[in-house]
Length: 379
Ligand SMILES: C[S@@+](CC[C@H](N)C(=O)[O-])C[C@H]1O[C@@H](n2cnc3c(N)ncnc32)[C@H](O)[C@@H]1O
Image (cartoon, rainbow, N blue to C red):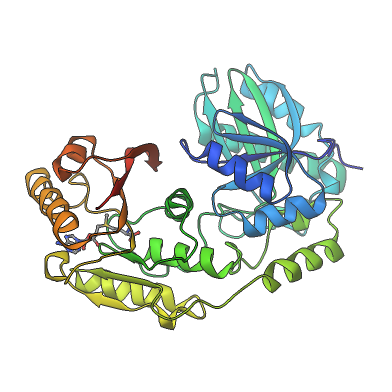
């Protein structure tokens, strides 16, 4: 039997700023003994919990099952420890695998090199024990191996998600500065919106917030389009339990009343992308999309407005964006009475330009960009 002795203890990766929120979500999905650490959360889970979290979590990026942890002062130490692991219970010569690594504050300081050494160790292990080795496939491997080296200590894990969960599969067409799906889902969750009033994104770009809000309302599992998960390769994978989890999660789905969610954007390509992406999710025909500059909208009263306007970093210049923020603030004041706005601002210099006092500010990250999510009540 493989040294898969993590005793049901897993590690869920979550973007900086989302740890607390992800902890609450993991608890709802059945995780126990949740502990927040840098980069994510440790938790205990049984098979059903692990499968449910991978299938339904909107906030975590991947769930790792630690296989081995050991001191790793050099690439040779990594190679030797990894070569001695019992890989045959997890992998077979006719399967494919890939290694993804990250290294920090360690003598091994190249992630790609660390991944190569681990790959060599696995290949040499198989040559020695089976006379043949599994091939590497970095696009669509059967088994995803994750290596983290921190302060000269290595943890080798099986990626039970099988690739990042933020890639839901509906974004088939993108725009220059799309939101990460997990972050869009976090914005919807932080807003507390449950469908009691319309949700509107007047800067909808490729439609990420609309898609996440729709899936949240309709209780569609976040990974409903994912064909294969890494946990299906665990030595103790229980196909019957997975089928039950999937069936129960799918059965929770509900219909959305027409027009409850809507979006607009001034850019033609963004509109095309949003239309194309939403078509990937069944039932979104009741989500109207309109190509319109927000200045030309009649107003958005009594609604939940969730959006991320241009940052002035990646799209558009800063002065123009400052003016856009000021005008959007005026639009909110004059034409959005009774609404609550959650505005993700990816440039801290722009936070004041909106001219409205936020009742709350959340620190979030869109990839490497530090953002503020501003909650603004419009009276
Ligand atoms: C940061 S992107 C939004 C990305 C989107 N959340 C996504 O995930 O794809 C900002 C969007 O604002 C749109 N935009 C810029 N100026 C606008 C305006 N005056 N009215 C409406 N949309 C505008 C851009 O076309 C762009 O799609």
